[in-house]
Image (cartoon, rainbow, N blue to C red; front, side, top):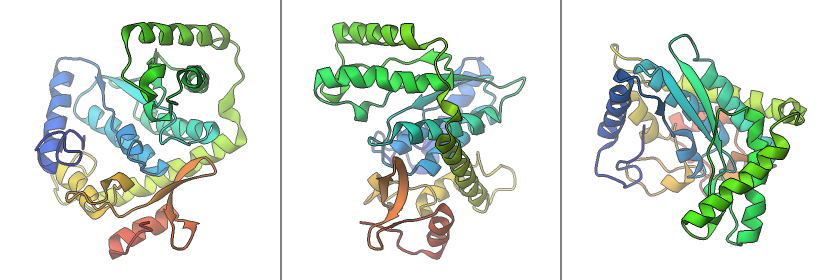
Length: 290
């Protein structure tokens, strides 16, 4: 929705043009009844955005797909992103995404779950990476996926080659052989459930705030390009890697704390709650930049 434009430098399209163009692409596929996958959420996590924003973005992507006529929606869950996220907190984040996305499910909107490991998490040591690949895979099976996206173990060192891709698939086949049936349910872990609920609540605050940016009475805030672009411009949607980007605020710092990616005030040496962060955004205050 926001990417492949001026925000990430992969084209010269302006923010509004990027959003409108990406929505038009979704609409084109929808009209032809072709399944659509919108990889919005992990684009923010790859830029070290906090977990609450990642959950909000997962919902927004699915909401746009449904609003634009998509009938079959493929929801991709990239684990291990940002690098350093703990397994418990990773699972909690993905369960939060899955719950908010599947709240949109209905007769005309079917959601398919796709899981994968995160590229940034792999070691450049190939033997270590071969252990990381199935470890991530076992955790991701907790989402009961329809699609398993195999990531090459070599990606922490170099782009995958054909023989390495085949070997990666065989490693995953070995993991599936042992773990696909009668595996303990990791989703019922109390800490996982507690964090999931926290993330859904915080994502709700972000989405509720987005509605206040809605100026066009003919469109909903969640699909209105002006509202969405404004959210990036003022910093409601923000990430550390956007610092210095003239089209975004880039006024945020995050940190992996107890396995979670959270907004962090390095000067005060404390975590910043989502409600406080949003308040600072609208007051134009500096938000914990390092």
